[in-house]
Structures are given as structure tokens and as C-alpha cells.
Image (tube, rainbow, N blue to C red; front, top):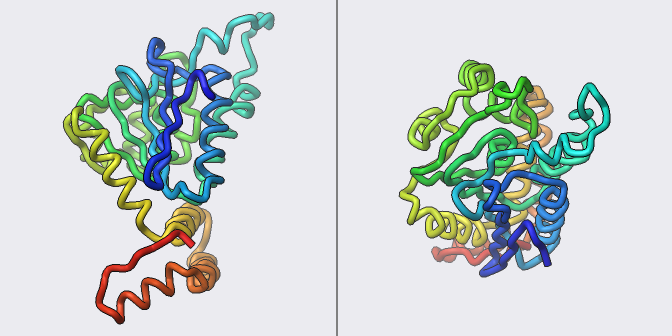
Length: 263
């Protein structure tokens, strides 16, 4: 179905893999369109309750395919990169955050530039020991994009985000874990297994509650306390009407483990 993306579904988990390994999964227009389509497929599939995002080959993603970005541009001043972003990463990152299912990023090798943006837009991040992280944009005279300016200071703090963005330094997996950029680090040969286990665990939890957690936490950065409290009240009302909530309450009183269905 796709040329630049692999999509697999198993046990409530959809795995979306970037599949341009010869160019370290650099993003061209085809990859943008296909990953967006694959994510939409996973988002709208009732059987899918968690999404894993990973890369084929030697790394997760080196970011944008710069050769394609400048190819065929006749403007002596270069391409309009802002317009390129509006058609590509802005759509993709917005969709990732809007998906009301958890997204787990399984990261290995280079996670550079816009590839880091995709990782940050995911909800949980697992790294292999081989993973290396860099904002990288400064090396070609650009500011961070693909949501990096939004997510990075929220994840690692303003000071660290400023340093990473201005210097383009590379963080290894252990340092990324130390500063909170990733949740856990595993040997490379264990990454797929650990990502699958985490995704399976998430797929067995109350899907609607997970989606509302995701949305409410994102909105919290833009809300004052009163708005945050009201958002909690609104979302809790909706969660309270779900079958999973009723199952959780029943299981609690029956002293057994709940069986959630995502409804």
C-alpha cells in the first residue's frame, strides 16, 4: 500500500515505520503524505488502541530531505521554507497531537532535526543505546521547526532547549534520558521488544481516558488554573460515562483486574 512507510497491526497496536533507510528516513513529500495517511488509518481504526512510530535501517530519521526541498526551485533567493512547512510538518505534527490514542516513539540511531520533532510530538519515547539526538537546524542557518520550538522547552526546560537549539550539540541516549528527553533507554536488540510491551500495556488501558489525558495535558500549557480545573471537570464527565469507567469501578469492588475494551 505504501512505498515509504510500513504499517502493521497486531493485538490493538499499529506500528508505523519510516521506510527510506538509504537516506536515513529523511522526509520527502511522498513520505509526508504516506505517514499522514498511515496515521489517519491507525487513528480511525476501532481495533487500534496504541500507535508505535519507528524507523527502518540505521536510524529513526535524519530530518528533511534537503535535496528535494531545493530541487527545481527557480527563485534565486531559494525556496519559501515557511510555505513548505505549512504543507508538510505543520500538518503532520498537528495530526499526531490530535490523535486520541497514545503514540510511542521507538528511537535508534540518528534522531535529528525534524526527526526530533516527530519524536517530541509522540507521547512516550523509548531510546536504544545507539540513539543520538540533535536539533541540528543551526548547522544550515535555520531555526528549529517541526514543532521543536514548542515541545523541546516543555520537555527539557528552556535553558537546555536554548543550548541544544543554538549549538546543535548531539546528545547520546543516556544524556537524553538524564535531561528527560526520553523516558527509558534499552540495548538496541531490546528496543523493539520493549516498545511492543509498552504499546501492548497501553492498548489494554482505557483508550478514551488516555486520549483525554493527552489532550488535557497539552492544553494545560495554555490554560490558567481556573481553565485547567474546568477542563478536568468537562473531560471527567465524559470519562465517567464510558464503559471502561464502569468496568474499572466494578472490578475494584469485585477485587479483580479490570478488562478494558476502549469504549
